[in-house]
Image (cartoon, rainbow, N blue to C red; front, side, top):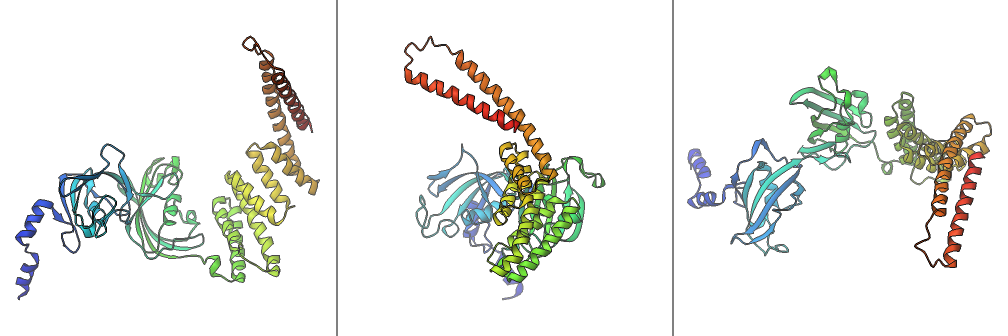
Length: 455
């Protein structure tokens, strides 16, 4: 057969194939086996089709070939799922990436692309299915808890490893605002230190969810992960702008995890990260410093013998204390308290841990606990001026708080005293005794608070 006749044989369709296409639409399968076919019922809008890796919302009706309906969400909430992750039948993962926004199409799915030989709860084995599907919307998967940064995978990467703090990163960044490119560059940096090379927090957060060789589209909504309320005059970007990035992870080498290292290597890594953290802390870069100190304590969490503990415990305590200092600066008071308590678990009389926990508790208006911490500091170091000053502030706040509480109790006494007994003609002795006991307890509580404020 000549090349020409071969080409003709490959491209010409049989009458049966033409008939199937007329009835059930275009064959979407890569192998062209007719397993997934689509007929557009209502054209969509725009040029883009649903990207694989996005969170897509759809409305649908599922029917057997005889027209009997077996499933539908029409009239209810749209069905949301991550496209291309195997959470739906293969026929959907193949057909939906060909659809545009608001498009409605009828998808015919052969058993091998549906529920196969086994079937499903409502689906008999070897069933051919038809779905009428409408694309409601799509968005990227959330990178941040608040959803301000979302990501859609365009090219799957290699393996499963994602960057950790200290990983060496090489990426290509293309940033757009309002459709115009404002940034297009290669950049290499240490993960966790992106701001040192002008990588936005939102971009670094997205990179933290990528694997090697992956390409992703990233959307950064107005807020703390972009240029913020001031925008970027150099790039002509106003405040609180929505940004779009395409990120290519060209290369990524993770920092070795603790379980991959010998104890000596763990100690060396911890010391190196501690020094980096201290450098960033002194520069006022508390967020970056915090990440370095977190690696310090993580490296030293495993088993060490008694001799090694003599080396590791002081480093570990310093790591927790430095974490606490960073959290105080960042206003993460609960995290500060937790870090202090980790340090106190190793050194129960550590003055810095007690002091920093006291400051965090004071910020949280836990005055009694804060006072206990500052008193503990002064019992260990009676000349500690900072602790004495903080104790003075605590006592001032306690006095104000106790005055408010005393007023509340006084109002309660008045309400109890003025209580109209007209609707209680048969008040028994037991009830009177309980009421009197409650009054007495309230008086004692008020006296105790007044004494504490004056102490």
